Length: 130
Image (cartoon, rainbow, N blue to C red; front, side, top):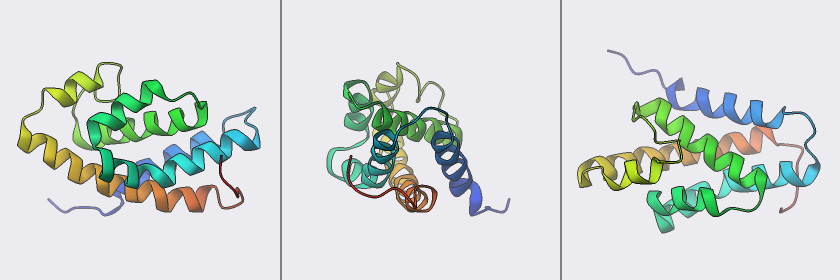
């Protein structure tokens, strides 16, 4: 089986593009989305996957929350781990073996790098912090 390097890029690009194109979004929400997408890698590397998933429910800024939900949706699609993007996703992460969790975190870091790259491409005209 041959690996297609677009496997990780495609859902991120499409997801961020679709998020960007939603109607009735003001500039502040677009800034939140871009900022969160760029910051995913640093958050994940510092705090870990479980804390990022817990942060999804704690976020008060809708644009940031949308990006975290999209991130876990992409991760679920890539891995086939069911319910990772659902409200029970924290329990799914908690119940993984150490090897599964570490492997998922490694893939998650790669995915977060894609989010940072594509955020700058998709939101190229959005400047400043949220």
